[in-house]
Image 1 (spheres, rainbow, N blue to C red):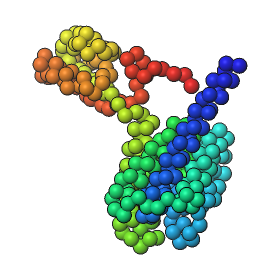
Image 2: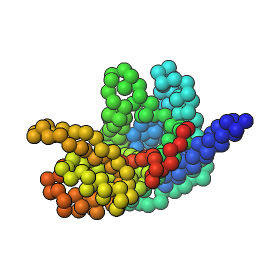
Image 3: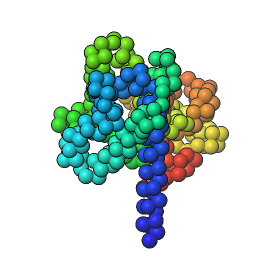
Image 4: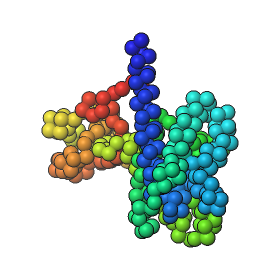
Length: 290
């Protein structure tokens, strides 16, 4: 019974995220993307091009054009993935038409730059929430998975190529060179915002340190920064010198302090710094089993 209640609670929470994300997407399309004919890529981008010439409801076009994609995706990606994508696509498409056709929201700005920025932002927030709700909106993400299965191309590269081609095609369809240029802005901003929604705003730093002063650095990380880490046995390639390499994850506000300390005790230390997201464990996010 507890497991059933937990599953029900999780499914309701996921559905709420999908609905909220779809609402934000629908408003973003109505206020910024549709009035300025900014194509964001994917099947929705093809639907916007068709909508430009036929004036058929955009949401209906998205659903119709996604039918063959979902048929192929169902066979290749499996039932569970296809059904989650179908749910997200139907809800988001209906809400796009609700805000653009029923509520009839008008353009929020005549400035195309502002429309591209805020349209991309709202699209990214909406898609990010839908993805966090473990759903999808169909389109290029399924096509990217299909290309990966058929050609071995990475999913990310596949999606990028598909979106690039569709956005570029909008320039020919609308006979406006600027149309795809604004579309690229929308795509770039929405992609970055999706990453922030999925991975978190307060990213941390992964620091990899190779030094002859590992004991002093370990002590500083443990006692001054109050962070943990891992010390790995290592050997330098150039001098073939045995030693230790420290791996630690710190908050970005602590980075300057750590760098200054390492520089003060070992100017020849080799340090690699990377942005890190979704860190699970003590001192960061709690580890959850879904």
